[in-house]
Image: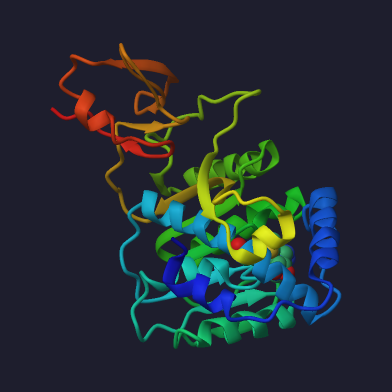
Length: 312
Ligand SMILES: C[S@@+](CC[C@H](N)C(=O)[O-])C[C@H]1O[C@@H](n2cnc3c(N)ncnc32)[C@H](O)[C@@H]1O
């Protein structure tokens, strides 16, 4: 389910003229340069098209990261590269009712659209037009940057991570597409945060070097329910599609971590459950929980991306 009533808000919007063409052009632009070449929106119809088509998946991706890290209710939120507000929607349910999140983006049209969408659920935002590498002064309990840091030139990433971390008193969540490129951005963010003394909350069960090496990369899939609009645009009657994300959530204070993280979809067979795990001893690889193992019953509920603490 989409976070915080987003599905209903998007369903109530009249699609802009030429939606399919706009989506095709935006998709091509993002595929070719991932937004790194600058703004890709020509007008407010483009912005609305992007919101209708991409927000369900990106909001669910951020919600997955916040859930996996068990981010608690926060009194304040800073969202960097806020776009149409997907991370704001994901955080909305775990934000104090009276909190007014600060949203930073270089595109004033996106700030206006995100404010309009969130007004439907009585959430005011403080939109600031600016560069995400130089956020406003202040400190926030929760800082998010979703599908945004990967748009920066690589040499600007360390300063952006430092700035985000300096503004954060609690949790910092960074989400990128679950591609090799997105995972490489997250790996660089992870390394920078560890060098700054951060504690990792998810997905990593340890603070050592990431054990995944090419052709593997750290990512997880979330199922996105297809809206009527998606079915019209993409054809077919499938009930959903998949969004792949890579992410890291760091905290200021030491936080409990699971003994392991489930890296791929568990395979349930007659002999037991086969899992690929990232473990808190710094290793990653396959393992089987035999049917007769006391942990088998609990392991049956596991999904890709879950933390795994075998029952004692
Ligand atoms: C792909 S969109 C993601 C938006 C939103 N966070 C989400 O998850 O849907 C990337 C956003 O980052 C913004 N952005 C990219 N580089 C930026 C920069 N240097 N300063 C401010 N905003 C930036 C873009 O304008 C765009 O709104």
